Length: 427
Length: 91
Image (tube, rainbow over all chains, first blue to last red; front, side):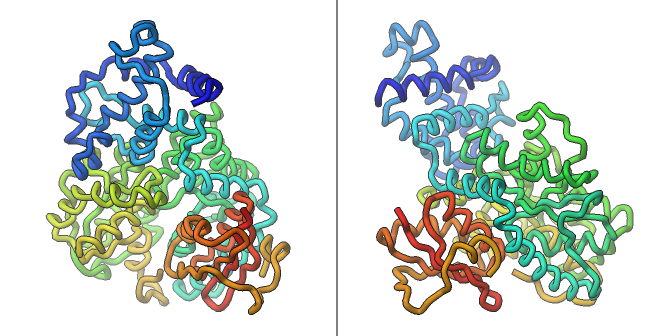
């Protein structure tokens, strides 16, 4: 590795290593309680996925450049140059981590491994070793944001197609998917696919909400890639749109990291107080049901239903009860997974790993605890409000023959609504 | 076909030799874009992928991916409920 790259990496560590992060590296007692908390280590038994090991790699490099003992007697203090071997280890360790923070929940010192992993990703990016697919997805989103007029016709045409389906489901020929509506109460920032727009549009229509749809998607691969600047640019697209339209509330779809970025990280990154609130779609749906603004009927969803807490919404986002209340409003046959809420097992599909083909094997192995939980529940329907979790659990469903219906919660809500065009689930 | 792909692409033609067919039907965005990206290295430089998706989000996603990676969408057309792309590997 050339001197310039090493200098760049050292600069990244110097910039990123806050006092709190240094404390994390110092206080880790290597007690290995995290090994039993990490779905990836439990599923693979591979040392490189041990949360404490992920921190250890960063510690090696940090000591080499910023610790006097490590600088002068590196062998004695396990200080290492960020050579290709270390970067290879760091790559596998950091990009495989789903950022679920279950290790932090069980760690006696609450060491935030995801934060440490963020430093690892920053080192990799500085060394030109950032995960290529996640980088491409982030760049494509930024390109769309910078060239929105280039894509407006395509997007609006797609919304019109979905609008026709919403009219069919609701039986209302006037139902619309409003675009660019100034002064609307809600800006809904969907995912790129129709599946996250159609049911939300039906619910907003039935609740008689003054809403408008964003031209941008909520997913943020800049966050998964590990580049805070890219992540900020991607989220900024719809935050600026919300300001321009003067909405009161930005609603993000059933996507875990999108919620956490929009509601928790964005203001911290930009040091800007947003003039609107940010909500997860299920917080809003829960509100509509409790206020009687939409009608749902029990008995329309067949089979026992369970619920998976996506890590970024639940343990890391604090939303535990509203999605459960929504699901319980749809069925009398609800069973929780065990453990649940803050102790819920990560499914193994977060952090962008579902887009990393080379990590498919570790991803599927790391779902072993989720498979155990699902089998023990006896449920035939899984309500799951996160796209990455659904992709992972559907793969586990196929691989292990679980016979589950893996469903978006708002799809179940629409299915439980007495609507003229309510037929079979749509893709 | 509206938007960027129409302005900068060329009409889909029987004469374009397709090196790889990708069936992306049923995949939700961004997976169609991910699959195209994962497979672009499986055709030679100058080679063409024909991809068929059903998620309308792919009509913006795939051209945006091509623009940001320096590849080229030769055409992107809606055919019934399907979205058909010809993507050329440029580098």
